[in-house]
Every structure is written in C-alpha cells, then in structure tokens.
Length: 94
Picture 1 (cartoon, helix red, strand yellow):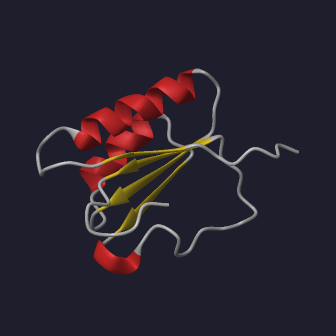
Picture 2: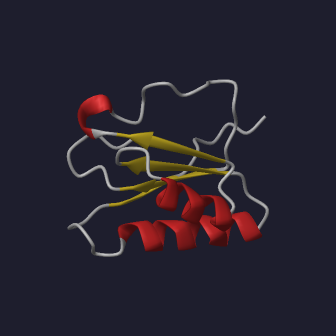
Picture 3: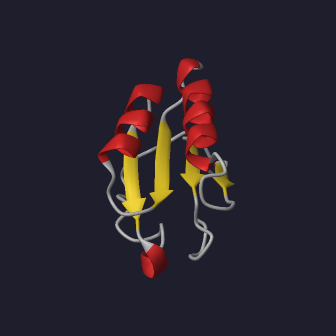
C-alpha cells in the first residue's frame, strides 16, 4: 500500500489561456509512463473536453461546476497515481 498522498497538479488562469490543453498534455505524459490519472475539470459537462482527456489517457474524468468543488462524489475505493486539474479559479482545489 502506498502511504504517500496522491500528487495533485492544478492549472488555473484566464479563459482561453490554454489550461485544458496543458492539463491534457500533462495527463498524456503521466499516462504514457504507466500512471493512472484522474482528470478533474471546473466546467459544465463538455464532450469536446471529455474527448481531449480520454484521448490523453485519463483513467477517469470528472466535471465540477462552480462551488460544487472537486471533493464531492469521489469514490474512496478508487486509486489514482496522480490527479490533474483544469480550472478551479472560483472553487477550492483538491
């Protein structure tokens, strides 16, 4: 059992500044090295964004809008090697 906390990398910035592109590239980086990546996105459900992270190799993609926050709805039985977040300018990061 890994006793180290799961690393969390979150990209924040202005709209259309490249956060999603960078987060999906980092997701691909970790995936190609055999790591299980959870991608979290501060946005309403978006099929184009989901596809970008799916292609990058995310094990799971979760969308959170505004104040809902990324701590809602996580399944504690699931294990990830790294969490990559996109956004979260308005809500608390994990």
